[in-house]
Image (cartoon, rainbow, N blue to C red):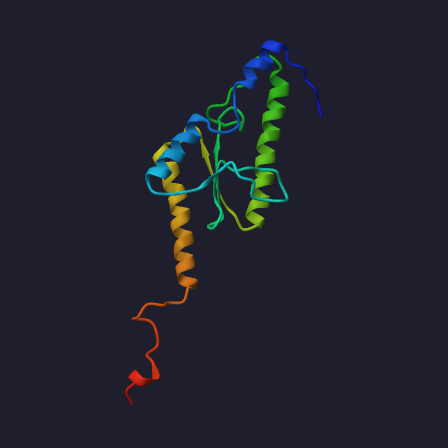
Length: 161
């Protein structure tokens, strides 16, 4: 791997950017919470990779990533820094490759992966998450045996011959 040493000013500047609780992530979290959805934040979900989805719905096995346009190299909005542009291009493309590998691992483990970009509409991103959760709920309800009075078998004493 290539090594690039940043100067102190650049290092301080880059240290300001956290890897969680970004504005787009917080917006989607607030919207889902407003809709009554509860989830885990920044939780490791696989022993095979170190990925930590932004939002995790473990029972439904839904992992949500809110990707930033710069770090995940959005084709619409990404722009490379002028300094060390070739190095940044390779690094950001490697980030995209790693994202694809991690997603493949999660899918192989039975996770439904939802990726949203920071520029995506918050309501639409929340709708996509809710769609997956409702899909999971309908699958679970089909598997669960009916226990309501209407579905249960009558007892021997109430049967009429």
